[in-house]
Amino acid sequence: MSADVNRRDFLRRAGGATATLGAVSSLHARPAAKMTGRVIGANDRINVATIGVGGRGHYVTSVFHKLGAENNSCQIVAVCDPYQKRVNRSKEAYQAEMGTLDYREILNRKDVDAVLIATPDHWHAKIALEAMDLGKDVYLEKPMCHTIDEARQLSQTVAETKRILQVGSQTTSGDQWHKAKKAIADGMIGKHIMSQGSYHRNSVEGEWNYKIDPEAGPDGKGENYIDWKMWLGPATKRAWDADRFFRFRKYWDYSGGIATDLFFHVVAPMNICWGEPQFPSKVMASGGIYGGAAFQEKREVPDTFHLIAEYGKGYSLVLSSSMANSQHVPGLIRGKNASLTMVEHGRFEGFAPFITVRPERAADAEYKAKFGTDEIKIPIENKDTMRTHVGNFLDCIRSRQKPTLDVDTAARAQVLITMAVHSYRQGRVLYFDDKKWKVSDKPVSA
Image (cartoon, rainbow, N blue to C red):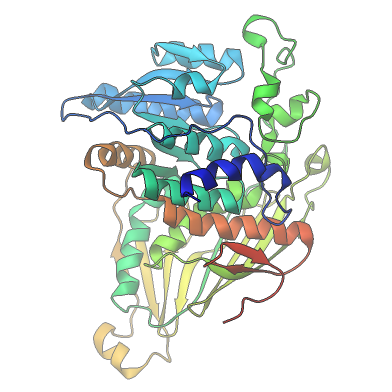
């Protein structure tokens, strides 16, 4: 059976998949044949369309729009969202030709070269797969997708269609990770033992409690109309719930909470630092709703979450997070001979002017002879990571080179955070077979 048929069968069958894989069902059939994209000349503007123009999608679209205005590299030709008010706002702000509630109208436009997908997580993979089959390159907001099998499908489809897919964790365009990658490759920490990181916040209203528009909904008139059925798409069918629509990150049907929204910004850079992105072999997670009343109302995901992962190369990763306390843990990678600190303040999305190598007192003689015993500070370029990340995507559309956060690096991060979600929800240690893309509760045989 061909791989293309396998992908379409996957989307049709997904509703009956196992809880461990967390798959979802398909709303629309995928096209039967793949199409190639428009050949873009050196002076041609790239036609970009955005699917999902809520807070994040509207902002990222503004970055594309500003870059296009500055260097004529791209233009926004269409925007889409199931909420009419959002469509109207973005269509006017970016002078788009089309505004629609139905993403298929955008994908069927032959003049659209690339799509920015900034929908809730449960729609990411389905729209990205359809877009690539129709010859479009994809800027896909993090997390890359909602399930492990979707990550496999995305990796497979990029390989088959040769489309450019950049995952929108702009953190990975920071200079520190790439300098850390070189330092580790040069032997500056010795044998990699463990990596650590965190993502902490604290807010009065609790995390992801975004503002709700009381006038909006499926019965809303004019710009207050929301196509609730379209928004639910492949997720479980439910009656209209404004909290689920405006605050979707609090619900398992559409998000993995801290793991998928925030830890992606930690795990993806770590995979870049390590030099060779890796799938985890063993994952365990814990946490709970510890933050008090502000975090308990209509919330499924925890406000405090931790994970430990082991890797087949012989090292581990430890991450911690709470949405009810803002104190971070330094982001660093420990080696037998030295530790490399990428973000002393612990904010992976923040800037640090140096990465620091601190040799161990017990470092071996050969290491000391080469690198000495004093700490080494490596200067970091302060970049606008959002502009850099979007610019890299546009450059790769023209060059057809691999983007900064390519699908396979992102898939390694996605597998870890999705496994962590399932470990937390199932209360057990999980193992991953990277040859079969299979999760189980038993160690993988050698």
